[in-house]
Image 1: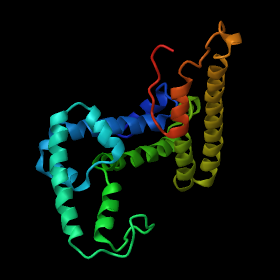
Image 2: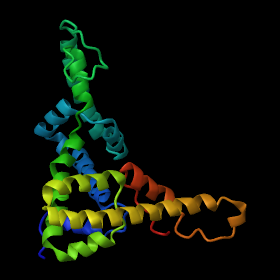
Image 3: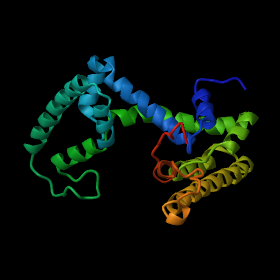
Length: 244
């Protein structure tokens, strides 16, 4: 099957030596979004207007700082802070509403609380990722239906994290017909459980290696069991060491 724009990253992710192809797809999109944000784009007026308005979530603010472009981050942070200060001064000048900050309703009736809650939920980097990531998930089902070679890649991959297993399980209901979905779920379950149990066995042996009776025993495949277990459980892409 001839590869298209969205099939290439999906095929590459499923061919990679990773504990979750979807985590790798997300990680690659996140890396590209960080590099875009901290590249020359932050000097463009339209991009700066968006970052001033939207800001960044806690996770991605830390990753932007780790990128190393301190001046670029400072420039974006300064204009974003100006925007936040001005907005909050304006909101704070309005009569206080009855709702509290911990109200479950998004719109508490208090302009200050509503603005802060909106700000807490917005992130320029997250938005860039979400513009593309769902299309890659849809591409998985497109390849499943149209590319027999992808079946083999899917079956031989190292499984998925808990979160992405659930995403594929849920999305299959709307993306596949009943017959195709039954086959997909059967394979998905086998691939997921076989591989998460494999990682759990590696974690178990990692623990056992600290028993003095196993001091001279081989580490087997357990040396990197912890980062792989983190990937399986917490939807966090951890690149495995090259030399295991």
